[in-house]
Amino acid sequence: MNAVVKIECINDWWGMPPEKIRYLRTLGLRMFYNRYWAAEIVGLSDRYGFERRFLEGHKDYANANALGTRGVYIYYLLEPDKLYEISAPKTRTRIDRYYCTVTEDGRKVRLTKEEVLECLKSRLE
Image (cartoon, rainbow, N blue to C red):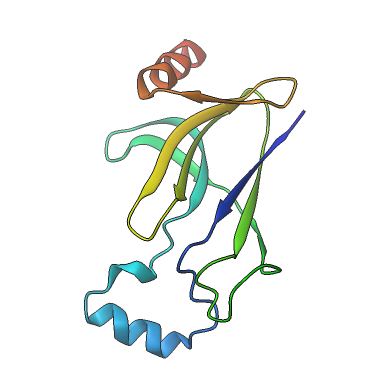
C-alpha cells in the first residue's frame, strides 16, 4: 500500500511576479528557493552521496494565505520498499530533512543515513 507525504510549502510565493522574485534573489535573499522536495534514492553518487530521482508532487492552494507564503501544501506519493529522502520546511529557518521507506501496509518508517547505506549495499549485491 502506498503512503502520502504532506509538506507545507512555506514561503512558496506563488502570487509574486517572477521578475520580482529574480530581483529579490539578486539581493541575496535565499528564502525564495524551493526548500521542499521528495526524492527516491536509487543509488550512490560521488558528488551528492546518493543518486536521487526527484518526485513530482501535487500542490494544494485551498488553505493558502493571500501571498501564498503559508497554507500551501504539496503531496508526494511514496511506494513501498523504496528508499526516500524528504526535505520538509517546518519554519522559515528550520527544515526537517530525513530518510524513510514505506512498509507493505503503508506506514512510513524513518531511517538513519547508515540504514539507507546498508539497504543500498544489500540491494546492489
